[in-house]
Image (cartoon, rainbow, N blue to C red; front, side, top):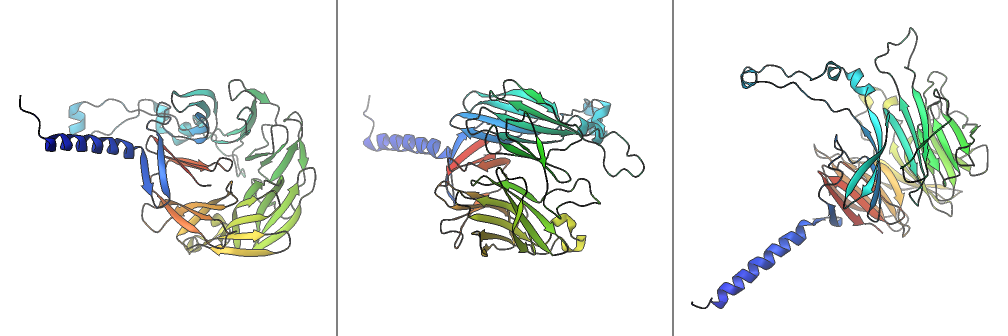
Length: 411
């Protein structure tokens, strides 16, 4: 047999090396913000209907709180019916009713690891839910809200009644306890310092505190001017618990055309107004252990309080700093960048999380500042994200697109 020319051997080695490079690069996505590592190709694929939910990952372990819609199907059509364009019909009568579909929405707690997939550990009918997860992932608090959407409103009734429930697990969602709670007292937000100490915030707005792991709750006074006598379901624009263990509540004072930010340190019963921001709505608040407060805002009054003709006007996002004495606008972003979250990174950076609305599809963007908000590096993360979050403890940024889970570090 003739010997294989060296050129042929080199070409084969080149093709093999190129193939290996393609496999390697396929696990990463290079973007303007750096390298995304593809961690999974089938993240939560088996849980239907598909969606990652509000997930959290530590190491290889993951937990997710997921609001789901009921699955619907259609009756089979013959080839002749398809050719004749016969209209699709739902398999069951209830599937055609938006109210019946809404009544079948649920909240799930899913848990597992990235290698072996997830399992469902809890499910409850709900159209609204919020949760809190302890840093060691053992304790979970979950609040749910469910309304019978098939009811007819009574004369003069503005809202249909909602049934609220509160649950607790101390073993990563394996077993659950339904806690005593008035069904007519809505819970919108859970804000906990640890498994024993925390707050519940509901419509009204109303505020409750526990010091003993939810065995007892005491109602606390809300900031003056935050309620609306004409709306029993008034809410704060933002409620945030900072690294300094201070609960901050923001609401818009339309008479003063300003957002008011109140602070409630742990152990105190009555909040105090810290500062106001004229002409801006608060979107998020982040505070460090020294009490330096950073605020993300959108220009103008809250969106749904504006007349329809004013809602499409430019509303730039801005970041402010409050040092306990003075308030300073640190940066205003271009109007097409809409911010919805602000984080403190492990290395004391500021991370802006938002959307670039300059294109038809829009894209996810982040902006990072390591000089206290004076300068920012904007990074386009692309479109089609189905979920994600930033871990302020590990500095990991997670993103889901399709069935793929990606990870990168923002220190």
